[in-house]
Image (tube, rainbow, N blue to C red; front, side, top):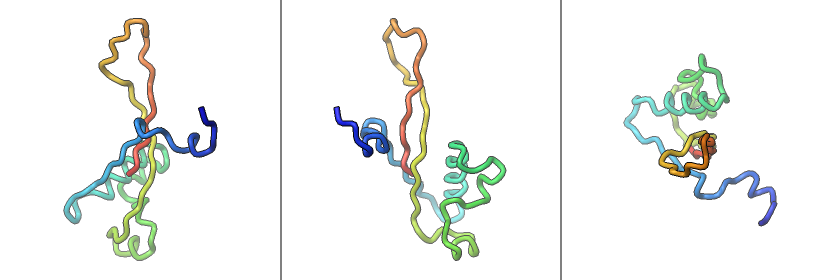
Length: 100
């Protein structure tokens, strides 16, 4: 088993998901992204939906519109369902990385 920096930073494909938000203009794409970022503790709850975290360009902030694509990797913790292993009394939480 290799123990290098890339394996520490990048989870295996089975624990990685790519999520793309597609919607019409002014239908909440940036607000949804801000709220997902807030759920990871990167920004505060009060700022979610107003800070436009992924709109980093000055012109995007000034005009209030997204002009360039931005990406971010978020951690998602979940408890797998459908595990019929009776030996495990307590289900363990697993981590998945979601690329938004």
